[in-house]
Length: 425
Image (tube, rainbow, N blue to C red):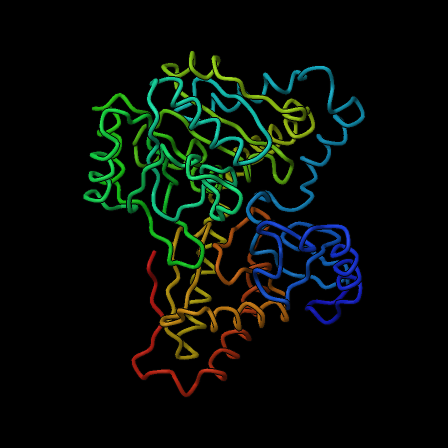
């Protein structure tokens, strides 16, 4: 097994075959044509913090499969629970006992949860929250921050091809962390405000990340209270990484509904909505369903994942790994005379180069890291997992060190004496 991308025979063969039977050869966020042709499209295995492509090249997975892997690939406890359930069955005539156990576990773990219901992916969860908010308030308008990703449904997809203006007729927009912009959106919504949906912090593809201003969060909470609207936290990407009981638990800002997916089942397809008692009746009144929503296997995986995170203090493990990566990469950038911005929480970081408006430097960096055994994205935030111990992070830093060197060599003539690495948490 190689430690860097050196061959692409199997991947190229699969890509040619896919092009004949799949529109575009691949679609959605996993289409590598949207990243770089240097990236492998197909993977064969994952173990702990490592992934292996179909040509046998091994990488440290700083994307954690785009967020779902929180304990590590093929965590033995989760895998054992899944195997045991698969022996009994998965898609049955109705849910198994794990359905109730998981709902109980979420209500116990999440501060703002008095009940829970389930789906399959993040779009299921955010769309359910939007629907419940409208049912509860008998109002229409949902406010969201400009440019923030909430899913792939017509009301929120970043690519509106095939959608209608009417799909977003009751949506309003504001700038994250900007009270004045939010107040203008409130005024436009008038008395028809059903809810406000926010991510725990600002993570927009290709932009420096921005932690939430607690005063802004409180301002939104008060505005919802004043207008009888619901505050919805889109915790799909951040849930069970920033804090165990909900990403805004440390802020002390209560939310009415939360959307969960990604890390909730360590890679198995599951989403959840949690909410407070006041919204229970509306949640039971709307029609939410799917043929595979009650499958037991993802639910036992989620139970095992949540218990493992609690038993191992997984949040702290990921913070430690993220802090080590941050310190190492900031030092490497400084040593190479490169000015960067390393933003977001340690468990979900993202890096940009100053002045890199066309992502040329970041793409070069990502491709060089890939060749040296580190899988990361040039425009999307990265993720830590509990499997990323010191040895794994040091292995990743070896790859990023080479990558910084390649950026320095390519852009040496354009570097200014004042260029320096800065940390913008």
